[in-house]
Length: 462
Image (cartoon, rainbow, N blue to C red):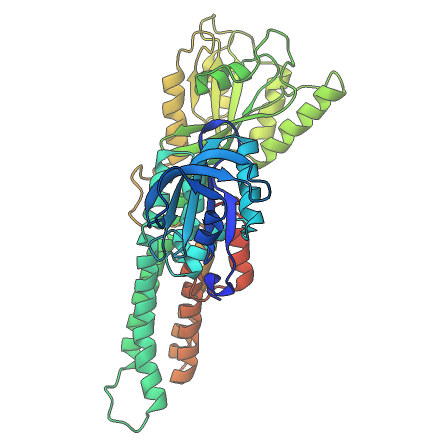
């Protein structure tokens, strides 16, 4: 149903709560202007508010005429707005209390509190955005690297939608020919052979395969990798985290077992967000708190995409080091030999023989030497030959991938039906299934429960 057809007007705070330069309360719906006029007093003039112009004035509470703040107010008349409804934005001084007071005044004057993502949902339902573009708004907000931001902007501009609609058009053209043959068998219509139908279906499959082939790379740039830093106590794990981040994020002391919990931070490397996790040292626990820290380390290790195994190069390999080695076998690993400012206590070949598939990088966290070598090694391992310039159109959303896979499977079923001599009606049903699956991506055939799940990912006010 068209969002504006319900006749209600929504409002929410659209900027983060807390001290800042500006805070915004957004109102959208048929009564947006009327609501604003009940609590806004212009500094000068009494002429009607014109669209897309800022007006200086004060917001007062309608119950007692108490002034809440001096604000700039802009009224935007539909359809040239984010939601394609009438929109008012009240720009005030940022602060938790002032924003909440203004919002409460707006709600008192007839608006209701918006649901999560409801402004963007209205933009979708009113035809301003398709569903992939709406989802790109989430990705823009959550982007952690420039590369993931670029991908989100490409999707927001409609490039993925264009590819999906092109695939839909190919299938629709084929459906049109089949439906004509089914509905008007006695008419003198151009015939299309089964071989030609098969060729056109295979062309559509190849287009979908190209999109599917981008998913692994897209997921990498969008979601990044979990990277766990492991090692026995006091080998320099927290120092390594600080060195990679170039800030003092983790507490570093000479006391073994200082880190008791998992510390997580994000690092951008070759456009890929890496979730770095500094963990408690792996050894037999000395107390209940350390035991819990070790348990959490093992839990992270079980789910990680990449391991940074830190070894103290100034000491001979310990039993605890070898115990860790047994736990990380089979995992993608980079070995980091720390403290290369001190004499090496064991031949590096000994370590290479124990884990030959892993790059071995020598560093000094104290002097932050060797860090560029480590970053380059991490980049090689993370990218694994992937392009640093992703395609113009790239899949990064699991929902999109699953829908395209469903469409491809339906095309495969149509090809099987052709090979087995099934009538055109059966082939057409498979093609319609492919159309429906692709329609779920852009939102033309998307069930309400999926829409709710997508827009519930948004914050209130967006």
